[in-house]
Image (tube, rainbow, N blue to C red; front, side, top):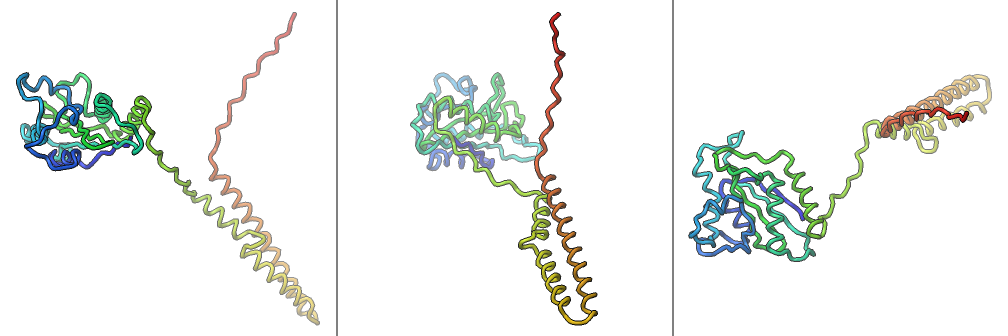
Amino acid sequence: MIPHINERTHTPHDPLSEALGRPVSPDDGLTEYTVVAHWPGLDSYTLDDEQKIWTSAQWAEHLEDPLLEHPFAASPNDDRRAIFHLDIRLHPDDRVLTGPEWAEAAHRLARAAGIEVPGDENGCRWIAAQAQPGRLDLIANLIRLDGEWHAPPADAHRQLAEESRRIEQDLRLIPAPTARRLPAVPTASTQLGALLAQLADEQSGPLATVRGLVEHTAHRIARQPGTAGAGTAHRLELIAGRLHAIQHDLDGAAAHLSDLSRPRVAAAPPAAHRAAHRSP
């Protein structure tokens, strides 16, 4: 079960058309098998002798009414896009849910999204449509009956995901695939440490290559006849020694940077020493 919050719209016609898989029409009739759940106040809002089956156009008008009744209601950012649309997809191999199961899932997700607040008589109008296999669409108007703007919780995505996991367990559905864990991004300390380790590497590092060339040159000059070459060879040997010392220092710095990049584990508090009990 994967919930997805769509971008808000000005009217409910497009979200409802997407939910039904066809355009909104004044000639159809959506029964309780399609509109599987709705806001609790609808039962007291309609008259007893009013027709029970509404067309999709009538449902769209019902959801749009708060926008017309409260023309100045808007979000804190002065946004009039009040139509909230949440679609939920089941796993392709999930079983077919019954009407009551779809209704239960709709009410639970509406509460998780903050659209339905138990005990709030002036809440938002919303309906849940189940018109396509393995799919549920929850459409709501964020303008409450009292004209106030309802802002969904900032962590609505997290709450919907957690509630979806609970619904999967309760209804024995196939769990949604978990997000693939991405490899950890190396820290700057790790990257710099690796660079220093490459420079100091005795087998393939550039300093080892330079030191080897200097040592080889020193040995060849030392074999030349005369005393002038001996001084030059000695100086080259000193240079090779300094290069070796630099390699050693770089290797130590690389090890230090590697230690800094490792997560620190808090030391366990020392265990309290129990006083030895001596029998009299």
